[in-house]
Image (cartoon, rainbow, N blue to C red; front, side):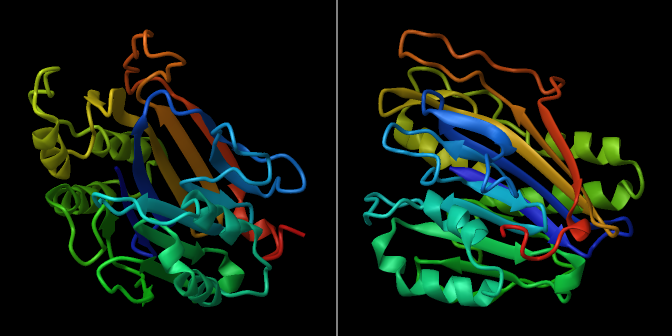
Length: 295
């Protein structure tokens, strides 16, 4: 369970504004956001570190390249996760793909193989100034969805249902996102802090240890921030929050903050991390790099 909010060309200072929570098991091996080692050092993303993964085969849930190719993924909630291929490869392979392949061409390729994956929502964009008008595309392999162009000037939200059938927390979050970007026209720090505040909207009261898991899974549809609860015998919660801003000159800031300390064993207590801890910040300019930054 994850949640994403974003808009493009909808702010006097910023070309792209993005905010997201990653909800995950707290003991799942994961690397923080980082620039990947060569030859893929154009990619800024976290990575899945499951035992079978390798440096060239780690999946990711969201990331961006130095030239502004952006992608993010959420799972579609369903009782059975059908499909043999890793959904984390959907975002990763967009970054690996040849620079001459458009966003639409990449999505057509994914659509052709869609039955091989569990349910997913995928967004891919090219945000480089040289790529204007920006290609921004959404696709899900559930509910008979088709490849859809995303519009500049629109505030989008996406969780674990399809884009056109949003959960209540997505509707609420879009409104809050719009209010935040309207009142923060030039103060980067204030905008970042308030977007992280949006990502911290939580249940009150938090679920108790003896609360019915089925009820919690329904309640999650209303919670932007997911507090810790036991699911399939493991601790589950919002694990990281991410904010990305790209201004109209191509200056990008990528901020990732931990919300719970990851654990290595079932006996280790998960530590909640206050929002004021600054996490990791990266700055670079996407317009200074050619569209083929992977070569």
